[in-house]
Length: 228
Image (cartoon, rainbow, N blue to C red; front, side, top):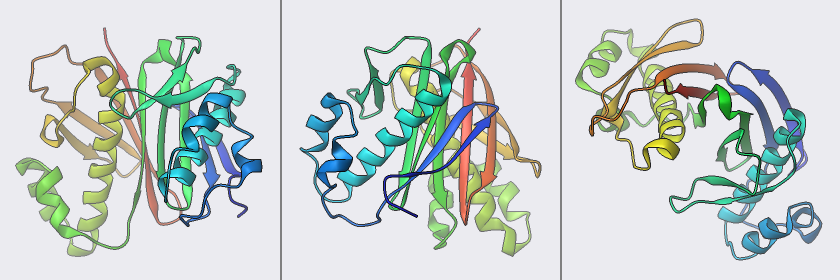
């Protein structure tokens, strides 16, 4: 796959998903690639070092392609004060979420009238079983432990990925960090998941729609949150 080129795009229930290949190295992003960005994105990207630069740039290229497919203008995607992507000067009717690994960046865009959105991408390997007690509630741990041993790690990763996407969908409205124990996730074999929220500060609870899919040894999760 050629670095910084779109490798797939898809229309899913929660919006348009675009994937862009990354080089998987910490080498500086070539000038011809940077010049494809909005001037404000270029200026910020040139301040970044190491893996952060290609990952940030690739995510912006993915966002631009997803916005094009959605029919939205190609505006700058910068960062808010929590480091989340912010559409600079865009039509407020557009929602965006980004995710990346060393060799792949993902953008999810949708019309915000349908709700806020979140996307996450997680590797299935290597196994890191210690993560379970950090991200799962006691009830979720019980559900995982009831599974055959060969299915437990995948069940943990799916829940973890969906919770990361939930955080991205909720944080812009709630304006705070959402802890792992504020959401319980029950995946089903058809790629859906039931989500129960236990918001610690008693905020209004949105309706949550969550989905996950397999992507070349990874879990890709998308979430939409709708407030009444």
